[in-house]
Length: 146
Image (cartoon, one colour):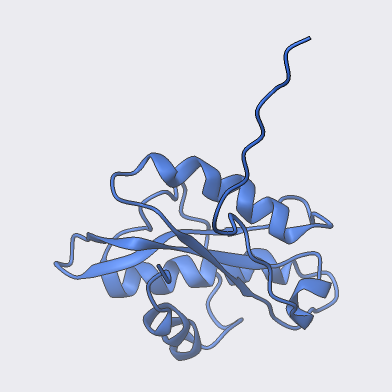
């Protein structure tokens, strides 16, 4: 019987940092690539996707990694960082979905379009989160580390 060759990557493919935010099972996340793209406003951004964990997934990292793995076909994208965004919960309010809608709305206000890989623009309910705080999150995210 022929022996199969084994290969191991030289650099880590996925890094997970310990964070209290990962204890919540319903949250929004932002995917940031190492390569920027030009938006309709004439500004460049590294944010390629804003989403939520699907149906309150118990493993938010797996949800984000599953989505990010689809975007490596973009030319020049070698690294995608995942940023977790959480908020306080309220009874009978799906706050993580409102947070995602608020972040996409803030992105729209800055760049006049949705992130590159978002398909639908969720309905934004004004007043749940501070517009300034949402825009600050979008503006302060760095490019993916190489």
